[in-house]
Amino acid sequence: METTSVVHKERSAAKIILWVAVFLVFFIVVAFFLVNNLYSKSFARYDRPEPSYSGFIRFSDVADKMDITEVQFPSGPNTLAGYIFGSENNKGLVVIAHGLGGGAESYLSDTMYFVEQGWCVFSYDCTGSHASEGKNTRGLPQSAIDLDAALTYVASNDTLNHLPIMLYGHSWGGYAVTAVLNYDHKINAVASIAGYNAPIEILVEQARNRIGFFAYVAYPVEWAYQKMLFGSAADLTAVDGINNTETAVLIIHGTEDQAISYSGAAIIAHRDEITNPNVIYKSCSAENQNGHSSLFRSTAATAYIDEKNAEYKQIYDQWKKKIPDDVKAQYYANVDRQLTSELDADFMNEVNEFFEQNLIIE
Image (cartoon, rainbow, N blue to C red; front, side, top):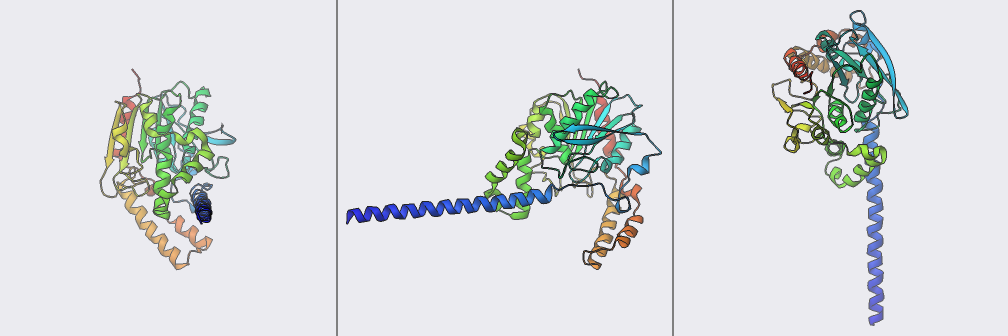
């Protein structure tokens, strides 16, 4: 009887172990599928909008106002497109890192502003964005990798490499301009706008918004997936970069940011971990200028964009998501691109003054 009991217990234990193993395999497969699906949707390729479907100013709108020199440089296996503006200016160089889904053209208003203030500007399209190579944008750490490649190119360009360097980045680029401080580049100052601290933090935050509590359960798979794609670059954080140097850093974030939570994945939420004494924090709380992309826009631009978005939604619903090309083209033809691209003067002047104060590193 005792022998039978022992055998029965061993079989029961084996069954439990088998079911646990099956569950773990099932969990990993489901988690991997969800994470892969999240990546595929979030980090697709983002081409430059067709001219007839663009709601903001384009390169063609400013071609007669300033010279644009197009260059190319490598980032990993891909060749990226870069743009030099105001090459005659010698105050310093502002390198602009764009947000996910955009490209250099998406920040053309910012570029024009800095050129008008006497800066030379270097901007570029990240991997999988606009005119650059890449079948997709790969993931959250890629912006820092591409900025490192851009700064390596700047160091090799005789038109640019003698100028003091200022970094200006928004969102994906807001992370890049701080995380790149983990690399060995001489940077005078950094303005990070609506940036996240760590790729894994914002990945989990955004996954939570899509798949709820399962985002936390799937954390090991999310972490492993990023490590598989990016290796050590997946571990680069804004806080580590900022603390790795005494470079002056201006961290700006909107209190009502719905894309990168002010009290969650945002760099500003980690201010207690930052030891660099040359960091300034700016919380934007003014109504209609406290979101993710409204920080640097004028109140008139924000109001107009809201109006046009509401108009587009009506058209979208009217045509049941299948808007004819001519209807869409007519809508964009009636968009005032100068107004949608209008910047908030006080915001930009504050960034400009911050850069000017850090032209000389003691």
